[in-house]
Length: 595
Image (cartoon, rainbow, N blue to C red; front, side, top):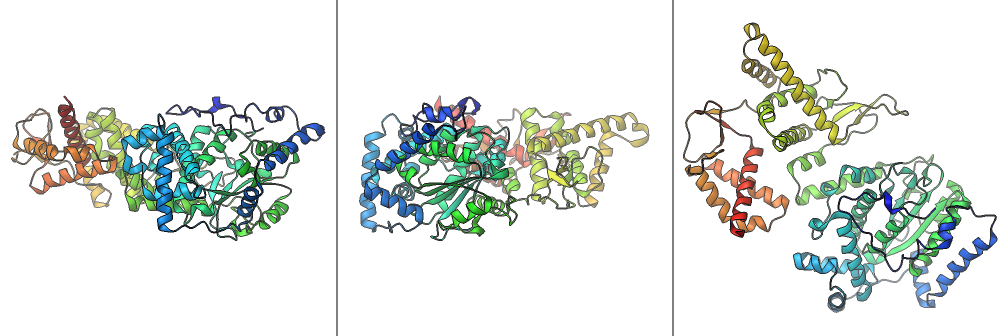
């Protein structure tokens, strides 16, 4: 059924999915509602109603419009390139249309916050080309785009590009399951192909997370196209095991997203092996905008028959994300995602160290053998190098973890995950799925954190037991120091043991209430001089500024120290805590300036 239940949407930023004039009658369409209760075949009137609507939709287009849509569908459309002077005129016209219709819109809010982002020439040209150089249509689509972007990602991400680091674990599951993927091959006209394999969607799919993943894919497609006016070919492949089990859930929201993307949909092919589903698809097509309706083709038959149908429209067999036996093949999809991550690493736009480390690592493939750097989460002690390194890291960070609050503990756990990933390690567990052959799979981030936290707890219990036997085994600190030294001989220690300082330097920055120390005063002066730059920076730039300040302090001979319990000695803190202190100074200066 193409009816949509919006109650299944569980957004983190409460999107409204406000009604779209082109789609408002989808919910109220009696045809679509009837398909929830009846299958076609026994009701000729119902079939005639759908056919009549489809015919009427074609009549809504002029002969020239219909011919243009058919040329798009068959890949023989005319070249839409324009001269530079003509493009400048089109851009001026686009901005004039935006000025007329933007009042009170999300776009106006985005323009006020960051006009340089919303008025980027290359971005405006994408909207123009995606709408066949029609300034009015491009302006209207830009308003839809910003509405949708805010509904999906919130105001804070409205005026910056969406990266993989902005996606939640649920978003990533929808992204990586392959239900929407970009083909590694173009069609015979050189246009990109995007495949929808609805049968790969999760059984408990949440439309909101799926839409966020689709938005990311859609914008990656748009920004990687040489000419958005050429368009993209969409293929909905719902045969056999790829049949949609969610009964059309998310149809309206998916259509809204497709219409908001600044890209010309050159063709839309829907493939089924069930006449009932093909007929329901016709009802869905009947409520599409006329231009898209004219470029939509529904094919019904076996795998071989549908592949022949698609070949007649210039979609080659090698472009299918399927093996020769019509099993799903995610090889190209994983390659595409790796390329996305590589581009983001090269740009280094607002990426944290832990995100960079996670994106840099090699994903664990099915059937692959764990390496010596992998951490095995299998419920018992493992003597592999990866697990030994995890224990060595826990030994080193034990004091910071045990004495810190929730935020400090999370920072420590993140640093351990980053260290494991940077060395090429993964967190793996035995694959217990019914169709498993007994191999390993990567565990989700939350289980990685649980594994690390459990390691700290085990270490604490072990230290308590050894302390009770101090007469034989020595003190707790001696035991930890010995473990750390042994790990270092095996090449496992992440860094040196804690450094204890007895004499301070004027350049040192001290934690605690030590505002009058010369090193702390110098830190405040440096932070104050960079305050304006810090306030206007994005998250990644802020982190790099904090790192630069830390580096300047260290190069001048300073150290970041926290007082020890005896009140006479100091301990050198980890860089992650030094950066946190610097960031806190930036925030404090901003608060004082606002007062």
